[in-house]
Image (cartoon, rainbow, N blue to C red; front, side, top):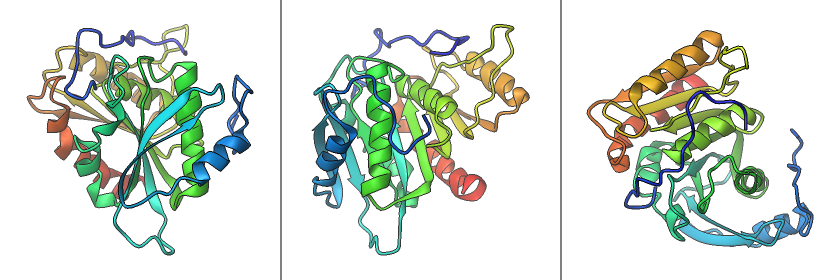
Length: 263
């Protein structure tokens, strides 16, 4: 993990209602299963319109549980944006990935996007096992789903927002934009200079966030923007950290930003 100004904490004091190589084949730290086996497993899933709650075995035979939301459209010559959305800290809740109707589905509705929501367990999103899952699911979706490879976004709330920052910083070859929400992040060189986030980011933060103070996010966005990042901060008026579903209208604005400014 690169140095950060704000400590990325597991949200042990908060439980939301949902407990919130640049090659084509990402490298893996374990080799019990191969990427070819993952490709076979993923390609054999019959994805249908709406919510698909599915799982495959990861490289170490651990279960990767995730939801894929397929829009009700004709995909003929019509590849869609892909949204990788990361839930907030869930204490290992088995259904943490299944609450896409809170803000992700309504927030990105105008895009007719394919949405993938993985279950990160009780680990943070930058842990080795979750990096392995998130990056490989992104690649698999690009290989086997009608995805526009130039319109792939990483989004998340709270701990998932920290994850959105992390993947925006470290994987600009995969993601065209990042949309962190209610996050606490900061990445600095040893001399204190903020690092540039190569992926454009649209940052949404509650005015009255009691867990991750708005001022910290404002300071980080200002610092990384000054360094050269394309980072936009939008303050969600009056909202606290425990109101994720109330951020939908701000996510709708983020979808407009994607269409008008990024794609």
